[in-house]
Length: 157
Image (cartoon, rainbow, N blue to C red; front, side, top):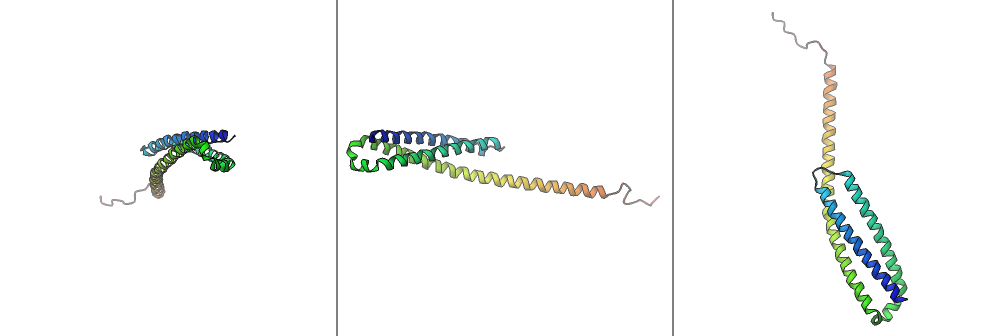
């Protein structure tokens, strides 16, 4: 029975590794989206949605892994030698998952800087557009008050 649980844990770690690989690809895509001069809102939003789904899956896997581990923790510590191959496989997978997690953190930090810069740029453009619209409105209001009659008359004849 413990061997089955260990296999479930190994499968869970493999799935987690696959999801983390997918997140790395999504982060690279996000980086490209943020690097474009023209910001693509829909592409960015779809990317964030996909990453959110991956994170939800990771949370479920982590909960399941912890639940299974809690069931067999005592058996594992009492009989480490019986399950040494499975434990070694899990150690290797955990190391790989940890390395992927570190890579994702670096990507996320880099993308965060780009997102903040993009939002600053968008706010500045919005502010400038608002100011331009306000100036245009003011100009047209002033011009509408000007009568059609000449303001200065040349009285020399």
